[in-house]
Image (cartoon, rainbow over all chains, first blue to last red):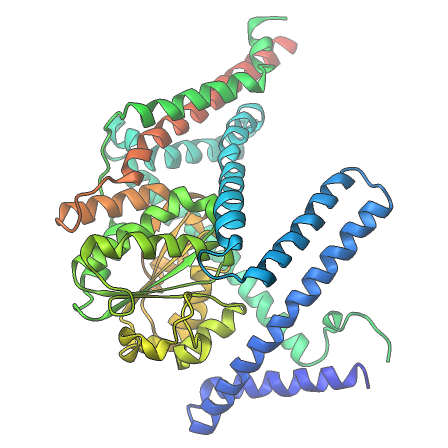
Length: 209
Length: 280
């Protein structure tokens, strides 16, 4: 029962939503409206799972004194402090959550993390970006063309460079990208069908019954 | 150890210092390299320009403070363009970390054009459940957002009397730093409700958007800081704004940063091949 009921709901809803997409009848539209409300309610429960999983993972790290366990304390303290401030003073503009935590902590920390990336990228490119093979050399040339074509100095060097960079992005890059996207889409359709028909059952969590 | 071998083992701190100096220098003393506008940014500009005065432009703020330098100038330039043409602006977001950033724009930009909150601009805020939010907005925006970001009931805002669902909005721009982002708007708003969608993305994710441009699903694209700078130039060239252009100013720094990386890669390769030949 624990497995067959979710499988039956999945099969029923999967087929109904497929039919609904192609039928613009008022009953179908009302069903669709109701379903989107249910999705919003169900997705809110993901927060409970997420917070629970985060707490379990970090308390386990602390208990076993794994390398970097001190950072788990920071994570858990940040989680509790954010939740308490949010619950006590709300999340409206002007609240301590917005003014102290968001504007004065999250924004500068988040921006600093991203800014540091430029330095690591420069260092990593210097050490690792080598034209060891023909393919790597081709990648290197394409990267140079796109990098120069995307900044004003490239246009100053040669006025056609932005067009060449655009061509690299919209022809060879797009051909490869489209092939990958088609593959991903076909894979997603196949997996969805397997889930709806009950062939793929990994999402049930592997429980018995 | 030869000079080339020493070059291969250069301390990363030296690379960091060179990079920092060359990025900072143009910010203090602009080089004035100038930015020309490309066809992708022009397509977004033309789509916003074609919205009749009184109608609404939807902007989805799907980014966080990390991508703010690249994407926030796009948001500001789009709002200036819309307000200068008396187009109303409706904002929402799929990233919770973007909620405060959109609030900053809503607080700062409308007063420049004498626009009032509730009549010319409304900010819906953030809500959990990406696909359900977009699909729900397609049916009735008030069902998904009964109140706006500031807690005002949507029924009390005059602008929302004319905008009840996505089909009432002629064009939208999703400013995205990743997932969820423009692809979700394409998947649900564009394919299901036929909404015209433009995108503003970070430079690293621009390649992901190109297939949707050629297929016509995306109307136009603002790619990275260059895209933001191109839009700023277009807005200023048409006389819609004459204020400081942060993305244009930052392009000088980005030019030098790209050159530093390229020079480092060339030096690294020269040293690598020279020492390899020597080892043989």
